[in-house]
Length: 197
Ligand SMILES: CC(C)(COP(=O)(O)OP(=O)(O)OC[C@H]1O[C@@H](n2cnc3c(N)ncnc32)[C@H](O)[C@@H]1OP(=O)(O)O)[C@@H](O)C(=O)NCCC(=O)NCCS
Image (cartoon, rainbow, N blue to C red; front, side, top):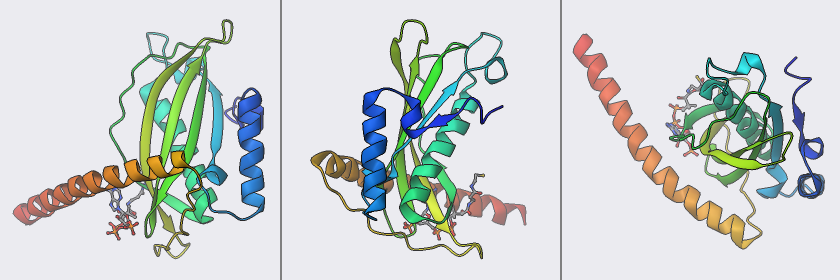
């Protein structure tokens, strides 16, 4: 069922989505490791099983779709399995009613040593009026992992446009903050574990 209601790439939307998918496909064919070559567009319809008692989408279901779209973008960059290391704070700014379409656009913003940041923009679309609304934006970090579990060094991301460079610079700032927070969390966890012993 979920396969039937999921479309990706050019099937997902109008001309611009198709153009983005074409351009992304050609960048991939050339083997260029650009942000654009990682583009993943996923469209879902909010069905009753995706909704809460208010008739709007579960946040958790949208998070699942975000995780999948971002993982696909990261796998396109590193061509290996990936695991989610963290998801930055997500703020849902508008509800999505049952029956609406949800479009997720994911792209790798930055590649570090063994990890990558993907950004995902989520919009809802009223199927009758075509009206669109921004639902949330999420930033996720994935680590490239071999079958053996070893972390793999990821390819360098080739920044082509000013937009690529702006997103990359923003990603570096976010990474600095998230790693400080992750370190703090690790230290607290180590303290609590030591206290229990
Ligand atoms: C995420 C995970 C791979 C990190 O591995 P680790 O050995 O603890 O950490 P390391 O210090 O070796 O870091 C590996 C990379 O992850 C990054 N990283 C670690 N914790 C992170 C966090 N909380 N947020 C973002 N990046 C993080 C590091 O910066 C490093 O990236 P880099 O090489 O590009 O600098 C590991 O904790 C893990 O496997 N977690 C479970 C993942 C999982 O199952 N996810 C599914 C959801 S439950």
